[in-house]
Image (tube, rainbow, N blue to C red; front, side):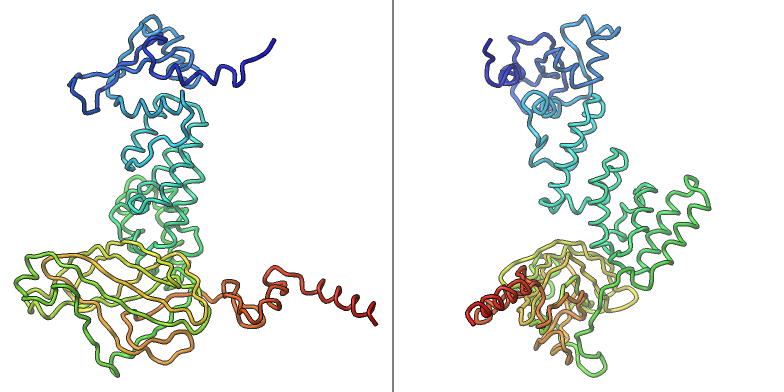
Length: 450
């Protein structure tokens, strides 16, 4: 007997929300904008399919509940749009449950998956999709702490490791976030067991103290003591990168204010009521191969607004961009500053490693928009003499970096191969060739010719 190619699975999509072939109607909250203004909206399902993928429906439709004999089942509080997305995965095999959705909608989606007790394959696909969203979506990366907490609630180990890794890269921003205290104990312990966290011990200590205070009564004194002990295992800096000061000392070089661009040089009254763009650029040349991991800049209260406006405490949304060999890296971050006690404040910006080879030109861009009193970004003039960078004028006070591994010729693996020496470089074992075998072949050929 010949079988139809693809079997029955080839025809399942014809059953999707098909009222003609349905044997059960699921009535859901109507959350879609349409002309009906109806309170509910119906999904036309099939008992055997729903019961196969969902233990919730198996108990309801084939158990001793009254719904087992009903043709219509009402699920109050369940949005039609979210339920439909889940059914698209069940019936149509879609692996991206809610493309272009916000984190809130994704949480709503998976919360319903959990309520319906749908099988573990859905969990695997959803976890993979969440990891992709964190890579592609800037707003999701800003919600890393919220996602980190959810990984413990949802028991998603792969996503949990990704969150822990992402936290470490820009930890100085996350430890200042008010959502840090909402992390579960497991997340805090996981962070403190990490060897490299991009923040200072003082910043980490403040965050842990705030977390302990927030959870007082929920954790024992022994747990609190253990968390504090783990904080003190770190040095003054919770990372082992190198930090190079590239600005002149303040007592030997006068600071130069960088004027903001556009209309920002207008009358003071206009600056206080109208939003403007503030844009700063700084350029330098790397003299040796390094892996950039962060930079430090310095903000100062703007004297242009007068003493009554200088002692302020606020925040700005900074857009930070690095251009290296025509490749751009950009990230947005919230910078909180406090000039109530001091007129200047250092801001440290961490990022994932950016490899800069010798003679690489690096351009830094710092920009934000705002009205009212805005701080200045300081320019320290020519960089002091060093073997790592060269620049005539710098907004960057320090660079945070790692040394690259070098071949015997002083080049790192990312360095472009000189055209004149291409053959010798490609034959090197360091660049994937096999120099020893080539030498053996040549010596054997030479012997044969002799």
